[in-house]
Image (tube, rainbow, N blue to C red):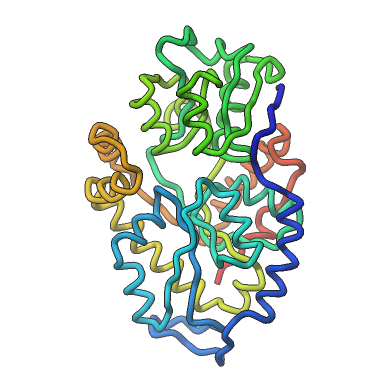
Length: 339
């Protein structure tokens, strides 16, 4: 598969940032005695402030806008500071490794694994699977592309080591298209959308809501849909931090996880209200909002030591490594820490 490198995980920066993050963890925290939290957690907490990454959609955005999340942590003596917005998971991981954020923004497990393989001391602390899934490969209706088979000889925009790339690889494999015949253009969402709109790429593999906005804005259609065309889940949403931070602040990490779980339940129970909040940030039309609300997506969370979940996650990680989306195999349980 031909590749045009435009952006993606900067592995060198991640490795260099790991040293900075460890130094920051050792010197930059306001240190307090370990104490039990009001919720009953009995772990350690060496800071009263948590810095959380957020993007222009999804769980952290809703949590940030509603305010209930921050109040629930404030009741436990924890102050929330939001860091972002990030266009996708890779730069939010760089913020964590570089010491400017404590958590990523519930992004894709695939770029997190790529960063871990590159040497970053990141760990998964919790997982979220929402259904129905809505990542898709889209093309313009007048492009002459009717199916995945027609992508041979075409340019397709994806985000490196993320949902977009793995979905394209899975689609090509399922439909018997040689990866070498497709030119992959690595672009982050803010750059990929205008590239698709201006015809500089022929197709775009992307997640919600950007794919839905582009489908509406550019009169596009779906030729491969994760929710119906993908044979098994290859990627999950994940809450990522540094191993050192999780160890020194296990009670705080637990409080953050529990607060996000409550927020996820609210989103599941209130799809119209949740999508209206996301629409305000994304600045898209009512048609897109109504479509997303109609999906009535449900959030399900998994602890970092859930054996059945980790088995599925390992299968996905091996699949990615075997197809060179990840540079090598990695044992996911070694980087999944329950607090």
